Image 1: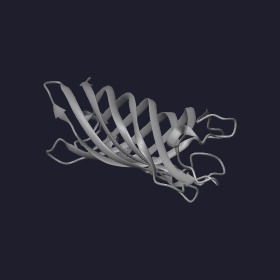
Image 2: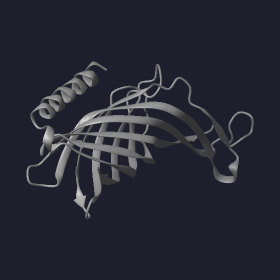
Image 3: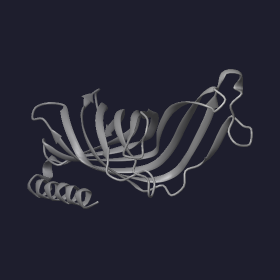
Length: 221
């Protein structure tokens, strides 16, 4: 948490300094964005390879204070980070089975990101914190076996439920993108990596690493 606040404070300081020295160069663009995530769960409580894909939709405000320094603010209204894993086993009577575990976690994300553009270029890099407030979290366990002769306690082959005690998500994000000018409208593909600083649940040592690919359509104001 302290690292996130430190980076955010430095970002605000740099933007303030550049704004005071170059007010005439301020530019504002905004628009919707869509994308997808590839998510990897890691930590001492993660026993198997656990990963999966998720989708997001949201919007972005892009403020340029100088030709080099700017600020991008993402508000992703639905960010589904889905991960799954499988585990094989054998019962006492010799029946083989496979248990598939999947979880779906949706967050409302807010991301104030420092944007650094390459001089005389449309390419840029960005870095900063990402904060996610959980709005939905669920899990599903499914057991499969030859002849469906292996079941959970109670006789079913599938269990669903809600993941309890989920944490607010703090992530450090680093990435790059390019602003493609289409005559006043900007098409901006971006790629980033996010390192989860907090665990998914209380008292569970598991966090999410996220590779994200998204596209924003921005309009200049």
